[in-house]
Length: 116
Picture 1 (spheres, helix red, strand yellow):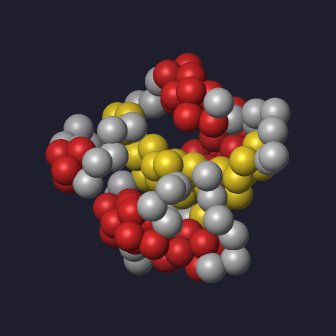
Picture 2 (cartoon, rainbow, N blue to C red; picture 1 turned 45 degrees about the vertical axis):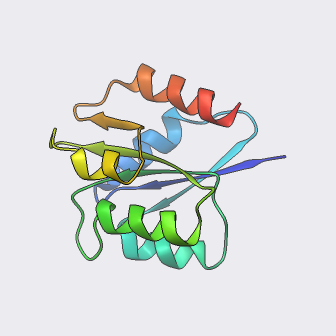
């Protein structure tokens, strides 16, 4: 069964780069430019994994993660941030977070671990 992944970042370059880099067998990847767009996408599609930036306009990664935890509790979340203060995410039970600049090998390995 194909696993649906969603990459959420306001930086178009990062969204497209991660989508290309994470082209994994058995997975399809969508992208959203902010949390609000991601929530709209959830109304049409369930996602196995969401990879989200924290600092975004309209709806940030913190609010998006809270929405996912409340409405889609079985969706896995990976948080990416340029800020090393990720305490609010660990308090929500999100243990998969990476600081920017990203270590792409570690992110890819974590995703492979989650989807296996």
